[in-house]
Length: 228
Image (tube, rainbow, N blue to C red):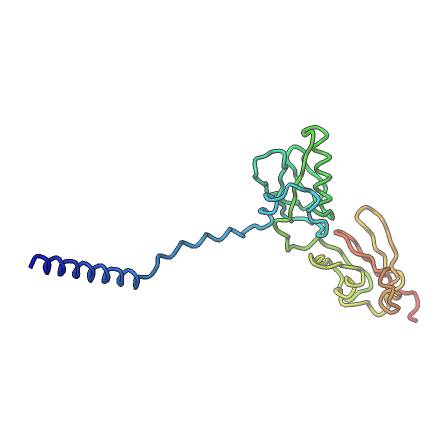
C-alpha cells in the first residue's frame, strides 16, 4: 500500500513538472533590448571626434560666408569640438588666433593655415581637425548689372553654381537692342577692370573667357555707336 502511495506521488510530480515545462516552452522568449541608434544629427562632428589625422580632411568643398565648421585641436585631449561660423566677410574666428580668412579655402587648406598660426605662439605642435558642419544656403553675395540690358539692377550670386558674366546678362533679360557685346566691362570692388567679349563667349563658344563673378562685382554693358 505504501508503495502505491509513493508511486502515485511520483507520477503526480512528473505530470506537474511536465506541465510546467510545457507552459515555459510555450511562453515567448524574453526580447533583448535593441541597442540605441547612434545620434546622426551631426555626422561631421562625429568625424572630427574620431580622426586624429589632418591628411584625411576634405580638400574639395570650398568654404563660404555663413558655413559652419567643427573645429578641434588633437593635442588639447578633451575630445570636444567647437562649432565655428564663417562670417559675412568670409573669415573664421578661431580660438587664440582670431579672425582667419576662410572663404574659398577647403577644410584641409584652412586647417594647415590655422596649424601654422597656432604653432607660432601657443603650441609646440598642433594637429588641427576641421570639418564642414553645415553649408549655408544663402547667396554668396550680390553683383550689379547696368547699361544696355533689359533688366538693370542687383543680382544674388547663387550658392551652388559658378556664376559668370554671361549668366548675369541672361538673368538681366539679355542685351538691349544696341548693346556692344564685345566690350562688356567688369569692375571688381578692389578697382580691377576687365573687358569681356561676350560675342566670342556666347556665339563662338569661347567659354573659358567667361569670367566668374565675385561679390560686389559691377557689370556695365555699353552701347554701340552704330547699329550693325
